[in-house]
Length: 304
Image (cartoon, rainbow, N blue to C red; front, side):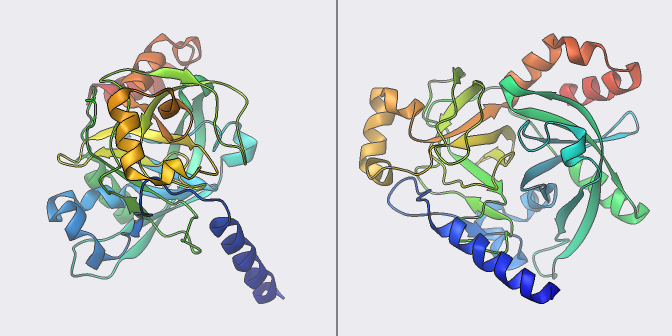
């Protein structure tokens, strides 16, 4: 019976994944990277740790940030984990790839506590745990390599890593990396916008940066990275779904970008940059009310 249910779930998931057109630019650029042989071409061995701190969680994507003041922190979207009843106690699937020549394995984390959630930056900070000491040690060492870019440039080239469903029936970790995957907004400019997703929109406005990277449902919380340095820039929160025919033309996109067309705020993919996340956290009354030990862990993370 379980096998029958699983079969129909996979078929249903596959139909949903293929139906809306998520593509930005001339081609769909996503490729699986949770297999060692696919990693080196995009990252080089020095950036192998990037794919290992990004987990599949509660229908979205989560990034393990590290251990600060004795607390394991991870970040995802507000709409992925808005209330503890919906998301705490859930398992997180991380891909452990020790080297490009080795087969990957799975490290399981678990969401332990929703520390805070803020809708205007589509951010939930979650305390996580690891049941195996050796796996905990691996994750802490990996996250120690995380680096952040607190500002961004117009047309900066990006990578996006997440667990989106489009053409990815079993939801492996995949990467967006083509020539359209870059920042369309002016440098360090954020704008509060409503959700352009016509399939499953949220009701509130979010501080956003417009980017041209291929994403789909399941990429909520996906990590946005500087393609050249591997530094963390922000997290995905939404995108226009379905995409129109103009959005699937790279020449049109280049025109929108250079002319700062209003369409860049309606038709593309949108991230929240870490610099805005940091700014709002520092101003948040909710965060100020947290226990000192947790506030200290947040401060140490943001100082990294």
